[in-house]
Length: 130
Image 1 (cartoon, one colour):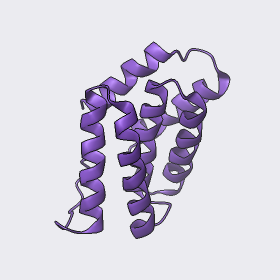
Image 2 (cartoon, helix red, strand yellow):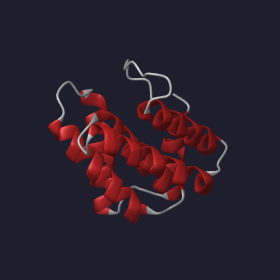
Image 3 (cartoon, rainbow, N blue to C red):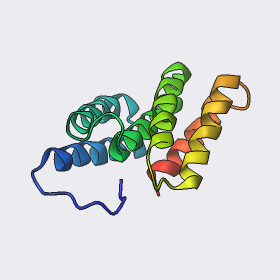
Image 4 (cartoon, rainbow, N blue to C red):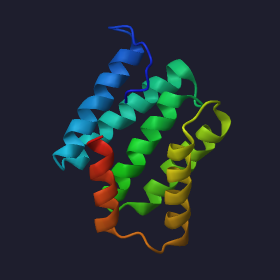
């Protein structure tokens, strides 16, 4: 999650970022079930320290969208995508492309068409390798 933020080593933000990075590494290896609790821990830390409406929280929800989709849990993907979009709607200076991407994913998930497990896995793989 490189957004140009300065992170103080040893801080809760740093701890959450390390958990998030470890979870992304596990996802790259296809170890989704091992990654999920790490993302959830990072999310809890960021929510506690930055509030529920912050960029780190939105980004973690985005990662959980990709993870849920990769394992075929589209209901969970919808919940996290709704949370990410809701947060991004409230934040200034959000990358319009990223916002549009998650709005599009949410629309496709809610319509239940055009989203297959394989297509979602492909999107997830690309997101964890950027």
